[in-house]
Amino acid sequence: MQFYKNIWRDEGMVPNTLAIGYVLLTYFGGWALLFVSTWWSLPLGVLAVAHGMTIAAYLLHDCGHNALCKKVEHNTVIGRWMNVISGSHYGTYEDMRYKHMRHHVDNCEPVAFDYRTFITQRPLLHKIIRGLEWCYIPAVELLMHTMLIAAPFMYESKKAQRGRVLRITLLRFSLFALVVWFAPWAALGYAVAYCLFLTFLRFMDSFQHNYEIFYTLDTPDAKPPYKGVREYEEANTYSNLISSRWPWLNLLALNFSYHNAHHTKPNMAWFRLPAFHQQIYAGQCPQQLSVWGQLKSFHYHRVERVLAEEYGTADVRDTVRDGKAVGVNALSFLTAF
Image (cartoon, rainbow, N blue to C red; front, side, top):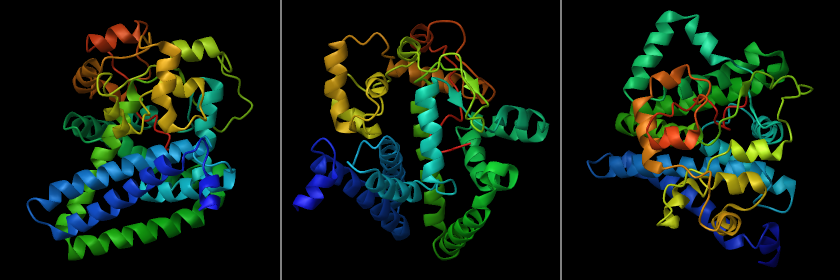
């Protein structure tokens, strides 16, 4: 027991064990409910699987910051398994961690794949994506996750991952084909859960920064203009709390919504962020966004957001409050290119 206790940072044995246990319970328990395929088990299974993947993704994020365990190797093991559960392990945990660290250090959104140019050069695909987004289907995110499979065949820097991607793709698609054959309602339920999962992560990502997008992920020597400028980082980072009145609701995103606090101390454990947020802002965070404004903005601009690259020049807090903030797509830490 003492060995297990000493694995975790910040006396995190209990909260981290509970979080990982929650992921296992909701993900595998949710799949069991999907296979039951009754009128009550299907919606419960969809919600359970979707939220299990959500918490897995945020645990992966914290592992990338070495915020769970004391040793890098332990964070890596947990992060890799959370990557499997979140369905994004076509890309490696190490690549995701590298991209996300660049985000923190460079104070920008470093990417390699320009999906906006890609779809505008293909008018039919562009029209389909806009139609799907109007229907609340996260087509842009689905495209980005599909590109995780294609990336080793498009980018020389990822060429060594071709065999790995082929093996994972064959395994996952074969398992899903078996589910479709033997339990089609369970397969449909998983597809819906996956879309809900991507939508929730995208909602949380869309308004947390007003950074510029630079296509320099494969250019490690690039020097973005605000690299290392802490004042710029704070002024262009936003805390999108799900609720200030009931802080426990922010656990739905594993406290990822305390985003300014996270950027102030990136390796702070998720369960410490609410108290740290209160400590540095004393309940008056100037960078905090209105959740209802985010919901309005997310709804009204779901099609316009397909090609948007920035919020615009207006203050993000004002535009979000008025439902006028467009936000940005395809900035998930799960898509490392």
